[in-house]
Length: 318
Length: 318
Image: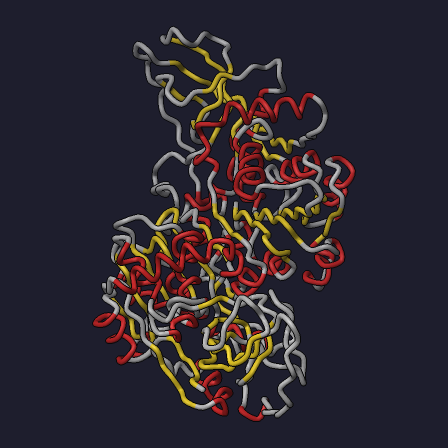
């Protein structure tokens, strides 16, 4: 588990802009589970952040000075700006945000990376058909809550797994899931999954790993599809977690399991964002934000993710 | 582990043929790992054999009497006939075998279900590209030996895992694999896999499960494909086997794991068998048969599979 003292706040001068550059001031910075992986030296899909380097992360920022003809002062953009109040950009990797569609903070949540992860993971990696049972773990999180709602839009039976009554109430009442499992109040996960999914599990969107995932995989239907999106229960493991070997379940169900990263779908972000925005406007997708104020609270905000503190997308507002 | 006394030999009269029926006499009967699953009451992809019922299995048989215009005496056919010397059929599910293509016994091996399993599992479930590293477990078995040889035909680097020097010699010298791992002579599987696959594993065709599979999955390349075909190391487990949870490896590699059954590809058996027969005739696929004589030895022949006795396809000749 990371500690606040693992991160250090450093002040440096804001560089003078060169031609083509813009100066950005952060409005919101994102904290996401993937960041924990970047703090490890272990092999992963992206290089880790070296000690002394700027911590990576997405942000929503306002242009405060511009020497780039494509950007004016007060434009709002989404970018990978790292954990800093100000950033200089040459315009590469910036995405302009239209504040009329939804609050700009959503560019870090339902209309940003987490929403896209839910969209492509459920619709492309798994593929869903009306009438199927879709189970998602970390269901009250930024990704999971959108997964269940898209599943509902597609006519599926959406079952969410989350920890604690506030989260299960949120996904049932606010997000319209069909069923919810509070794993913290459950002793026998496999039996509980069986009760909530009497017809078996067709699709499983996994954000957590561990015993919850073991239990879902023991209840698969033939031709089930499983997207491995995250393994937050193992984020702070110091040695490999052990559990029952699940391959026989995968074989018997002729199931497909696929790990994925949303970046693999970058070429299609804009059409997916258009669809997500339409669902948000129509009220078919509700979103929650868990906003913490103050740049100095970034470490605490991140650490809290691994304690399951947040309902919906956790952001830091500057 | 099954015991010979778990099976009982019973004599019953041969029924008189009705119109449309043929009487078949077994020439070869197959023993296959999947049969162990049918002897369990556990949920699987096919109903289990109830106590007192005829044990299921494939055979190659000669027509000894025919009241069906499509079959003549001395025709040789492949069918699911169960463990019996004689069977009566109405012609449904029979496949005529041309003895000029290859010995008729191959209809239970390289030109039958095991060969088809290798073909569809490698080429359809995984998909392979020239230059990729393909690892197969139980590599000296009826399925695994064909997997590695097809991988070679497709220009891949074929690595086989098998138990004991006779098996590794067979897959290297007879079947032309590029590399072999004798897991019985290896203490550290992950290190051994890394040494044999210095560029990582692109495709893994799994017949065994257990620690061998754990080790391969720790060495996956990005976009690796894994076919789960069998889990013979767990065939006789009395409780769930435990091991390291592997989903993080699947996630980081953005890998795809799929369980499959060859029956899902039944509509395309004939074109696949044509291709396999061509490769056998051209010498690009070698096959081994491990033939045990005598119907009474069926139980012993099956049990031996789980002791790893066989190199190549184990058959019983009647």
